[in-house]
Image (cartoon, rainbow, N blue to C red):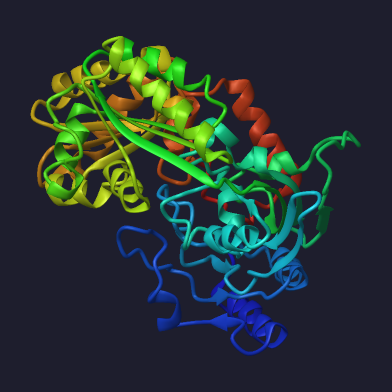
Amino acid sequence: MTAPHAIAAVIARLARDLGPGGVLTGDDVTARSCDPFTHVPPASPALLRPQSTEDVARIMRLCHDARQPVVVHGGRTGVCGGAVAQENELVVSLERMRRIIDIDPVSATMTVEAGAAIEAVQDAAAAHGLFYPIDLGSKGTATIGGTIAANAGGNRVIRWGMTRQNVLGLEVVLADGTVLDLLNRFLKNNTGYDLKQLFIGSEGTLGVVCKAVLRLVPLPTTQQVALVSLNRYGDVLELLGRARTLQQLSAFEVMWQDYYATVATDPARRIVDPGAEFFVLIECMGHSKAADEEAFSALLEHALEDGLLVDAVVASSARQVDDIWRVREGSEILMREMGPFVSFDISVDIRRADEFVAAVNAGLATSLGGYRAVAFGHLGDGNIHIGVHTGPATLAHKHAIERCVYDVVRDFGGALTAEHGIGTAKREFLPDHITPAALATMRTVRHALDPGRLINRNVLFEG
């Protein structure tokens, strides 16, 4: 641990090097939160605000020499504690590094700084008839660097993949201040190891992402959205199989009855009757209005004729599109109706997702007795979200709830986290969900790039 006088010396030096506004202290630090839902102020004595890759390299060289640990902040929208800073750590915020450096409409690429918000990137791409397809509810705040560190997914992974599939190159500053130029612009480049992949999904533990080259796609000009209800999980799978034959399919979101019934307490979100067992939001985005509408309508008509669907509502305006998506994105209603809840972000075999949800409910009933759970998620890519509430003392039971759910995840061969990451919140469960050899290899990679564990030292691993 760096001594207080040594930390003070590092802060003083960086205040000179970074210039006006480059270092914040006191209330300017504690007014911020490391968590998007509750106020968790950094315990850090200072927050550093570099304006360039060179500034980040300067920070890391000085911190490396002083053995001073840092925590990197992007938009602070992560929900697994990865941005939490302790009193002996300095925060490095990339909020002043948000330039759109270059857009190449011919190659369909964009070079940006890591502090740029997803929404700003999408707006810049749209001006050139292009689209960056990583789409999150927090896109106005979530940054390119943070989503790269998390390998963020979102609602449209079934069509365009995770962040990993949409990044061509990176510029990264290592723990010792070395600048690693991996700013590849090519779709095909097999020149040695694809080192950028190490940093995507590393949760900031291997280096500080400063710039990225993003892969863009043509901006969709049509959008069809429907909310349908079904009574059998087998019918949900059949509908998914049929929907996948549409090249325009961009989202297939499933809500179990417990989730939809809760969200439908808001009359504006009671789009279809809540009496069915499953509710599916289907979205297609394309470029030919007549052909896209015909294909979408045929999918739903045949599903109705074949008895797969109980009911279906198709959006006929942009407002209705938003209304249907608000059903799926009803987290504020869950918080209002359920109070505090423990949330989960897992991946499971799509064929067994309903069996998995039933097993979670059975485990919770056995372990906790009284509880309430809701299930929903991006079923098209196997990602299920679950929220569990046990009453006013829910958070006091958090560990028991987590142990119960994660045991079921392990038994089903699922993934501990699908898109949110490990952070600090899930560290203790990681060894149960990957092999000892894989865990040892991860530690080896981290030690090779950051032997002093200076960057995000409390993330991913315990001890």
